[in-house]
Length: 219
Image 1: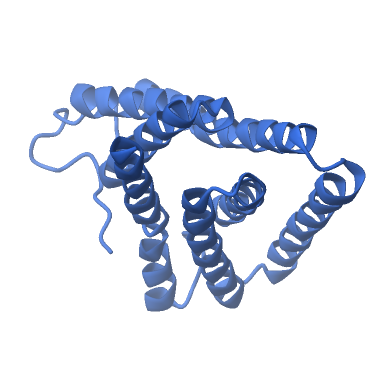
Image 2 (image 1 turned 135 degrees about the vertical axis):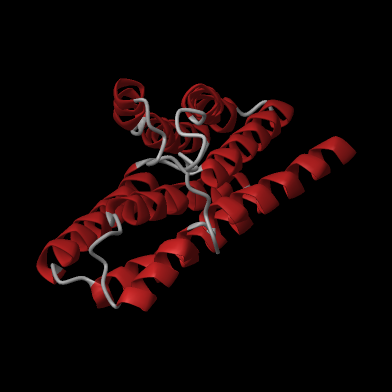
């Protein structure tokens, strides 16, 4: 029980820390009064992921999931609002945000109204959240292939890689302790992709000794 409590706090600290890395982009947008060099979709997809896991945590009465994803959804909403304020392409951003809102409403109606309450509801929601999380962890694979091709890790963040590794490991162990494979399995790819990033740092970071070939996150 003490180990589970330790894992719970580790999940909270590491995950909130990972979500907070978006403050770097927030600081950049406020300084430049522009969102040109910041990606919008990661904020939107992470917010959707947070809302899905928040609902799963509520149904499962898991305080750790509820707390982490409440904080995550609030932070991502802040990043989205800031991006909408500074972007010049407000039509595209607004349409994508409205589409995401439609997905949330449709998902809520399906899981709350269409499906009967019980194990089936929890299982289908857990599976949906798991698949979405796996797709988010695997989405940067194209960038990793580009790094292998160019031999440069400039586009990688070492701090974010460490945060992702610690977060994924914590949630994997937490899910294992609870015997909840919907939590454990989708976080395993996060460990794998983080290890691949660490290898790429080790392999290519020494290409230019005079200039750091990776970027650290400053908050």
